[in-house]
Amino acid sequence: IDVYQAWCGPCKAVVNLFRKLKNEFGEDDVLHFAVAEADSIPTLQPFRNKCEPVFLFCVNGKIIAIVRGVNAPLISKKI
Image (cartoon, rainbow, N blue to C red; front, top):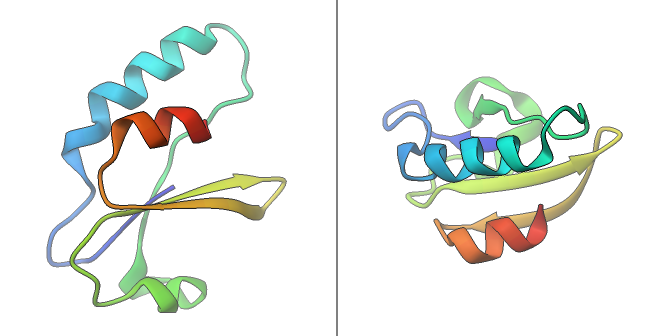
């Protein structure tokens, strides 16, 4: 989940990375990408008013990893 601030929108720098990874997983429907505005979701309150992008990795609705900032190698490794 790409958690973003209302004033800046989702992180466009990782869109190509996410497309590449989605293609690598092929037909398997195990990988999903989403965006979430921190200002409008109460659960994301800890991520509000931050200048860096935050990426949450979830399995069965539970956060299992967090990457702060755009770090493509680390994001790929977490996925």
